[in-house]
Amino acid sequence: MKVKSSFILFLVSVVTISQSSFASDKPSELAKLMKQMLVYIQQEKKQIENNQTALPFPTNLQKVSKAKITVGKKLSNEHEKYISDFFQKLNGYYSAKDSTDRVISFNLMVSSCITCHKHECPGPIQVIEKSLFKE
Image 1 (cartoon, one colour):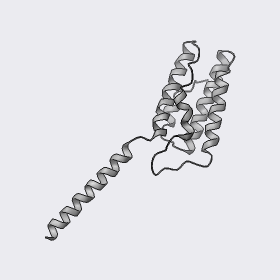
Image 2 (cartoon, rainbow, N blue to C red):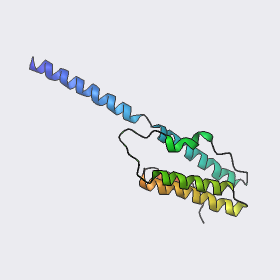
Image 3 (cartoon, rainbow, N blue to C red):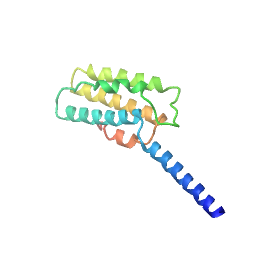
Image 4 (cartoon, rainbow, N blue to C red):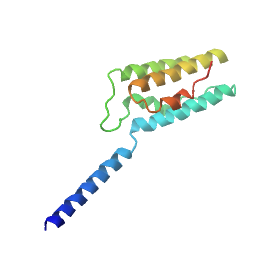
């Protein structure tokens, strides 16, 4: 009887752990937006390299400040400041007057992403850094 109840307890534990790990594997709304942001940045870099005009900023990415984060994670108190800084740099990018100014403002925008990720989620920093134009 003890073996049977121990086995049932073991099975319940396995199911519980499995379900919790599946839930944590699902990317948060913010994680999904960050992947889309990376695609946008990579596309913009190609636009610059090909001397083409800037693409419109994807409207769905504007909700980055209100996106739900990964369960169990907490954003820093400065998170809103990082988002504000990004959008300020984004406006500078779209206001660039020539190709040199556009590259500089693009790098400033990407650097603001890196600054935020240093404090919030350092994992993707190396990938983001690849988007920078080398001087």
